[in-house]
Length: 207
Image (cartoon, rainbow, N blue to C red; front, side):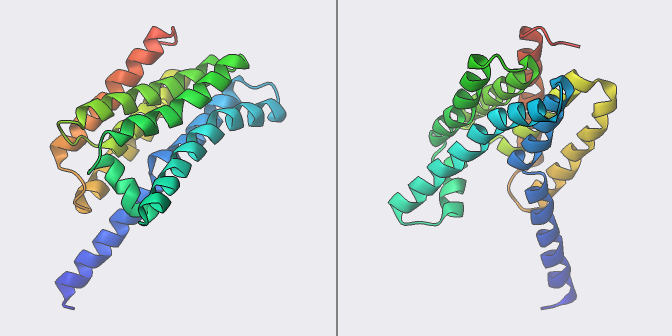
């Protein structure tokens, strides 16, 4: 392996690491935790609301992926990629599993409106991306991460805009991995920003 190949391999590994660090599910945890902390009266309430919002959203979709992997005799990672690329219709199921249980739980227990807005915003973004990806491959990662960072902007104001530095870092990593073109990532970013903002304004949480 020559120097150029070694450098390319290192860059690819670094891009994969960055993509995993800023994976939508990894970003969702601190975003929900911060929103729950903002509205909670004490640590017990903070943990309760965070768990009620997070657990269904981060548990049900992976369980579905594992079930599909077992039923098809394939690997989980391969099946997961097919949900976005080879079988985009499956994204609608993933969207429902992500958002519906968490939203119903938060609504039933009269949870913080900020948490409900985040879940509804990300779910709406997933739904729009699912529709778009029936004809065009916009960036699922970029749209979801942008939605979550937009939620921080509405909840915490201009100071949270520093988190948007994640966007170009994630974009470069996805491009280096060959997952998306710049246009696909820009479209994903715009969908995440516009749809999530619409949800927050619609629920009366506009800045």
